[in-house]
Length: 375
Image (cartoon, one colour):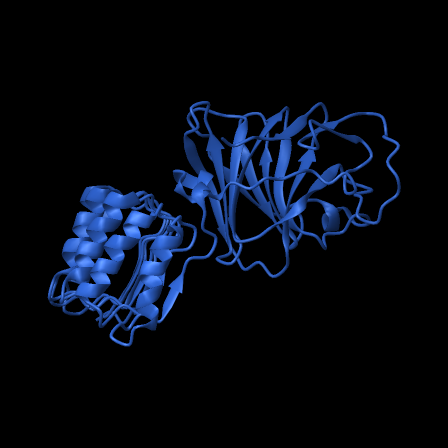
């Protein structure tokens, strides 16, 4: 008998066969699994149906499920909603964050919440393109089934003032169990599809730039040159390595894109990284204060604390890279961005960020790096 209670397969490129095996395990009378994390896997409707079938089993004891960042569609939501309405489903926490569910998907999930069989206590819909209309669906669901849901996360959405008010009234009403409503980081930009909803505006900090780096285009482009520039002395300037940091710190969820010519290094770093001294203490990715993606002619390499991970070549090599950071969750992801703005996942690092983060760049001979305007 397996006594595994918590299991994570986050970012494991799950196949249909994997989902079949998981569902079969959930339906086994010997399975005592309570928590399952399947986040950051591209799941098809058929995959979600298979998992939902497992949730409906009378033997299933799963109470916490994460499907965050799984590219779920409205059809996927139909399968999940069906599971929530099953008398056998004992799910108490469901995380659907970072899926572009929009009105159609949220309405279907809300239909599941209405069921008297639904015992869900925590629902995360952060970054799901939730609109004011969606809040009406959720409010109606709570009115139909007011006795279970305690926490609702709608951060990084655009619920509007009216939507927030509809749900806030439930917090104040003793007939409802809702105790926590998160609507932080809202706004119209959150209705953009994909990671663009987290786009941030960055500028290069001239006070940190090595003297052989020239900044241009409103401090959006950095070029390596042979001659030292007459920059004033500054304690934050990189003296020994050709690098630069950005002005703005990275908070919450951030996404930006960078183009390069030749080869370069795209990084996130603590501000405390050394500016002079031992090479390994200063170079992005060679220490425990920074994480880097090395972009060369036909390959990528991830570097942290001098540990290297070579990324297999993507089908259509692009010289544009997207970077996504979720500071509180400790997630750093790199993507290759095609000419048609299709994102191909390169690598994800999971860690704990303990200091303020900044984007940084290194430039190799004959190369340049530019921050892109995301529209």
